[in-house]
Length: 470
Image 1 (cartoon, rainbow, N blue to C red):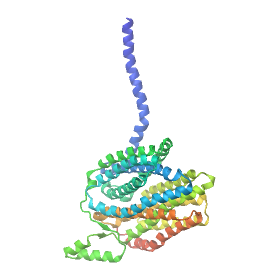
Image 2 (image 1 turned 120 degrees about the horizontal axis):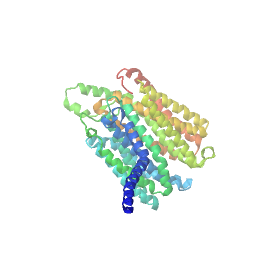
Image 3 (image 1 turned 60 degrees about the vertical axis):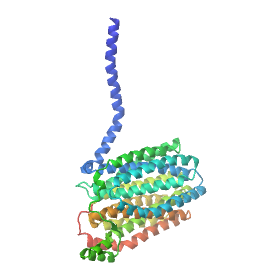
Image 4 (image 1 turned 30 degrees about the horizontal axis):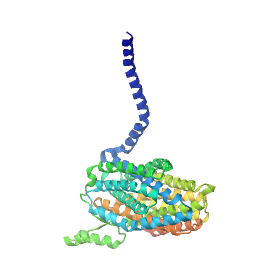
């Protein structure tokens, strides 16, 4: 009897204990699965799941998380771990070895994409795999301080920008019916920004364990990105009806193209080959390049200035964090506002936001201080997001669908080169706040004054051509 009772007790106790364990497991698992379901629901809403845009949003979020892990590891190794004078020399060497070759390689990315129109998924997967393997190589270099650090960092940079160019070219292929191109790009950008904001403190925590750990995290993230790239819809690789795009603002190219289209001579059409996208797009691109140049300038100039003159008596790391948060918040706000702004004159938006940045830069140069630095970072981030979305809208409005993909690829390459140029200028200047912000104002003024008249003219003459730009 006793044995039977004991057996019965154990038999009843087993299911109860099993159910309790399952409940605890579900309770612990729920925050993660619930969050994942919420993210998937948001990224796949309004037809984005059916078109494949939702997967691209998730892929770009993975890309942003991996990039920030590598940035944290490299910044700590090259910048924060040594005194200011030595850090400036090391960063200058880093720029010379990585940015200079990248400036030469970046213009090649667009033409290479034109030659590989059927392999975009594999191109993005290759960029992810390359960064994953280079992250492992960097995990050794950050410990030993060997020269492998610089070519590996160059490889990461080139692969990252190559991914960005391909991603810009892919978006038009994944548009849901209810989406405009600018709305789709804003969703993709917001996904990347949110992932960056989440991954940054995680990367900082891994960095506290050791300089290798953020790079191990980047390896895992980029490997996941490789498989996610391959899961994109096959239509991403379709190149049906696509041609190359030539970014030219002069009227001669427009008239030449018109004559070629009207000509019956097939050979003459074949000789022209490259299509033109018109002056509105290229002037908008020039204004965007000025803002991207300003971004590169502020990153490198303030990185050293705030080590010598922190904001409000704070530490250098806190000061850089304040500026970074201000710029990131402005960028996210600009992306959100741009997604909901249905203006029929994106040229006006570009002229307005760049003009506002110019005013803030001049004010910050005259009254240099902590408030001015934070305000310029926030306003520059907001304007860059708004201006880029407006450029996307102009490409959507003015560029024929058969050349739109190439136009996105080439415009993105130009913007990346502008960022490199701005970073070089920031490195070359002495650490004087008023002088630096005066140069920042001059950069913005060059882009604004050279494009305002043309953009306003394009807005007057082009606003009625196509109504759907946002």
